[in-house]
Image 1 (cartoon, helix red, strand yellow):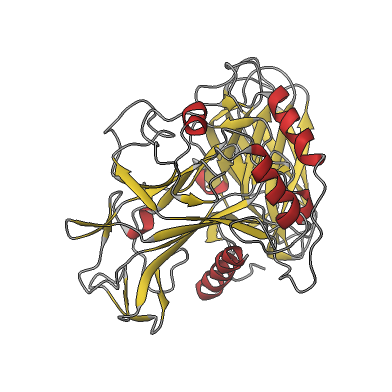
Image 2 (cartoon, rainbow, N blue to C red):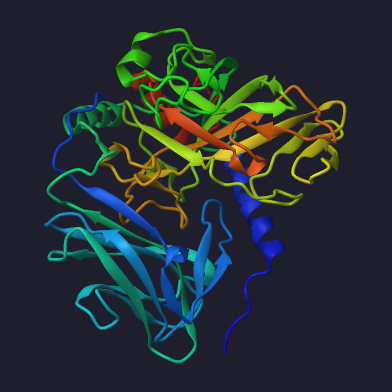
Length: 456
């Protein structure tokens, strides 16, 4: 018997709770033969049988393929399995009852078996766990992959959020930026040799420190998405390193010391699309960049490698954001929200409240790449309190909390990238290694709330 989808209101409340909880809280070598990770969202199938879609109940989860029973299947076209060599295949699954497997086959429903991923109860239809298996021999390059469900008993037995394929192929795909392993190992050794500072009595036990930043400058540049192409992007508002432009690199950021952030040891670049009211740019009064952890054991967290970069959100998302939408803009301060814009997508704040937004970044890393072609595939969100599978390395959970000096109005706003839903943020790490390492060791690993100075 089919179960009922999770109510949309419940999904929104759960997602908002996760987002708010998060707020409380190297030099690159030349491309070389190395692993490339391809993530395939379950809802991106080209064909299916017996599959329905629903929203996941956690931040960043998007949609999942739901109500999956024995004999159901999905087809995914042009899945790049890379070159020859070992392939790590993972699936993010959730199950309240029952057991079974997900058979991944190539070419057809009864084609060659690529991998078998076991399914067992995870404690609920929205309690997610990543299951992984290793494949030693597999077809290479772009393949048609079928996911075939095999349940041990009649009825629904699993939901699937995504699959990932991490290969040790014979060449890095364009856009993958491998970490210099020698330098990363040296950074890790320095970090692990640090003696944690003693945590005084009375300190709030939340794994967190922050960089407190003011607005720096605006440019139609994006050194992550459009490097070396000045003026090719929509307008961005930059924080942190004051030299950031289309030509910024790890070396240039580390060489330019002025920053709009406290502490001065953080020379990283942070940016978001510029906000407009009509044709007038509304530049933020400030941004707090929280570095925290959502892990069950935050002691597993390590610093970002030098030169690491990633993006959260998407400029391509152009959908309405009425009141109650996850990830929406909100009003902080006395009086809070008193209304909505005429199109319903923006809050109108009380006179003493300001427009605010929080953007949460992924917190698990593949441990191999400083960047990826879409600037997202080398990272993932933790959904079960740990980092595993294709993303085994726990990194700080970054969160941009941005405040604007405006209460808004019924006319609403627009972003340089479009609608409110297109909000996104970019992070290019250029911290001093020792300064970042001590903060991760003292504050995050020990689950202790620290200031921007890295002190309790």
